Each structure stands twice: as structure tokens, then as C-alpha cells.
Length: 491
Image (cartoon, rainbow, N blue to C red):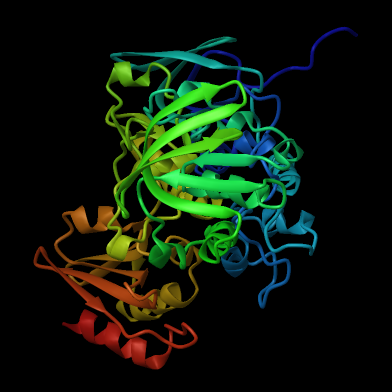
């Protein structure tokens, strides 16, 4: 009596340390354990969920889940209909967010998402040392030492699944006086007020969408116009549509393309000076309230001092195609994995900012780490007559390829006439690989938003790309596609 319950993963030496208990950290830990990699998971939080313990501010996600679908919930194929649950090899661990959703909306609430992650942690028996804050990092000839509030952790590799959770403000004179999205008041506080929202990306439009029923007037401002051509094919489009619709009919919302040159706090509000970009001109705005919605950054702590470089104005770590930082042995999981390079054909980026995309990144990352520290994932030989059917099935049904269009691919390498199944790989890694004979397929979207298969073939070290025609019902495993694949491989 009076003793605290035993906490897992005491300070000490491990092959890998995972920092964070959000979906990225939980998914990475799950697959590291499946691969037999000795690792510890530490988290400053008091329970699982990461950012979903408090965000999004207005309680609804933007990634959807169909409660019912044409395939069983416990099947792998259901992942295409459920963008929010984590992956698992065991059927009973799949679709745990969907199991907690009501039918009011196709997007889960924040509490439903948090509960699904808690259930995954419990049912998968994932161990996490909660209340253990990572504080600093040092490197020596044997690896890394993570200094925490509980003591030192020594490891050969570390995975930082710490998200993009630190509020970030653009460098605008006077912006320090404006509250960030993270400090937003209850919507009722904006009744009858003119509100300026600084930023026109996801959090900016989330604020705009939420305040439309309350504010007298909304003004969303950022220099760049909204890419409606790209937005129309993105999962976040529903958040953007209502403010854009109200703006288009001249209602109480204005979506302005303008650079803010200065902000001045007044006793009764703000004066803001802006310069139009797509429509040049200087303007002065007077508003009652303002909100900074310029997003978040990854709380990297002292990692840049070790040599971890960043992108996106220093907000996100720069990563290799397999999510390793510029310091070998330090990796990133979760939505900060968006720092990895991608092709961005026709302006379409990866889905690595959301669970539906980075859950697949985490699975591949665990395999990468396992290969570095030990035998890794077995890549079996495949008979030649199984390659075409497997690639066709991947194009038609693989949730990883459909969730991460143009970013992940299914690949085979060939050596002396034998095929070796490479599984799902980052497409950019396949394109940069040195396999002299290889083939990969990906599901891609062209400039008109049409989904179609693309085949990449490397022969004698030379790469060729071939786009196949789209299919009205996306049945890319039909006989015509199999014949085209067979023709390419026969060559």
C-alpha cells in the first residue's frame, strides 16, 4: 500500500527510443515490436493520443471514416474507408476509431479519435512511460543519450514522434500582440465582432468555418491565393468551402490575398496594414479581434544543434525518403514526416500530414530501422508469373497506395531473371535506388484530378515512366491492365 504502480521502460539502454505517444509514436512502436526491435516509448503526456488530446480546437477532424463500407471492418481493404484508425496485423485491432463513431458526420469528433487511440494502446498492450519529458540530446561514439525528466536513455537510434505541435507565428511586426489559434476563445466570445484571421491554410479555414455562425464579419488574410484546383482533390476541402462560398457571394466573410505589413494593438481592437498581392493596393483594416492561424512547428528542442536541418521556414525537420534526419540514426514519425521529399506531381503533395498517410510511413520506418539494427524485413523471392497479378491487385486495392497517391509504390527488383518482392516503398526512394532491373507501380492523380496507374521501370539502370489510362470504377486489376503490365515486364 502507498507504492506507485510500476512504470515501464525505466531509464537505461535500449536499441531504439521512441519519443511521443500520439498516433505516429504508437504506430511506430507497434511495428517495432512486431519486428522484434528492442525499444522504449516515452511521453510527456499522461496518456495516449498526442495532439488529439486537445486538438483540433473545434472538435471535428477533417479526415473521414465511413462507418459502413462495401468490405468488412476487420479487413485490410477497409483502411481505404477509414482514414483515422491505426494499422494492425490482428483483425481485432483494426478500425477502432470507426467502432466509436456516431453517424452524425463522416468525420470523427476529437473525443472519438482520442478514445480510438486509447483503445488501440490498451488492446495492443503497447507500453509507454508517460509523464517522462524529453529535455535534451547528446551524441557520442556509441549512439545517442536522451536526457529526460526521469533520467538518461541511451540508444542506437531514436524516433521523434512529437508532431508539429508548437505554435508558430510569421515574422510580422506587431503579431506578438495577437493570440494564436492555440489560445482561441470560445466561439461565443466573437458574437457581433469583426474578426481578422491571419492565415489561409487548414487552421485558418478551421477558425473561419467555426466562427461564421458567430462573428459579425470575418476577414481571412495571407499573401498566397487558395489553390482551389489542388484543394478540390484534398481531404481538407470541406473545411474551406463555406468561407469561400460566403466570400464569393459578398457575405460576411472575405478571403483576401494580401501581405500584412504591420499590426497595431488598440484598446478596442487592432489596426492592420495590408498590401494586396493578386490585386495590388494598400489597405488599412480595423477589427475587434484577431487570431494568428499560421500553423505550428515541430518542437525540435536542441536537435538543430546536433545537426538536424529543417525546411518550411525552419518549422519541420528535413528528412530522407525513409524519414531519417540529417543526423544518421535520428528519425521522425507522425505528421512531421511530411519533411521527406516527394515528387509533388501537378502540385499534389503526400498525405503525410494526417494519420491516413503517416501510419503507412511509420510501418515502413519500423522496417527500415529493423534492417539497420538487425536482419530486418524478409524480402522473399517471387515467381515471375505472380508479379503481374500482385502489381495489378496493388493498383486496384492496396490502401497504402490509395492513401498516399504518388508517394508510396509497390515494387519488385529483378536479378538474373528472379523477382524479389520489395513490398511498399517510398516512390522517391525507388527512383533513386541503384537496382539495375526493377519495376514499381503507383496510384497517381494528374493535373485534371483524374486518378490513374503509373508504372516505373528501370532496365539496365535507365528509368522509364508509363502512365496507364484511367478506369471509370478504378478497377486497375482488369485484364487490359494486366496485359499492359505483362508487356512491360516481358520487355
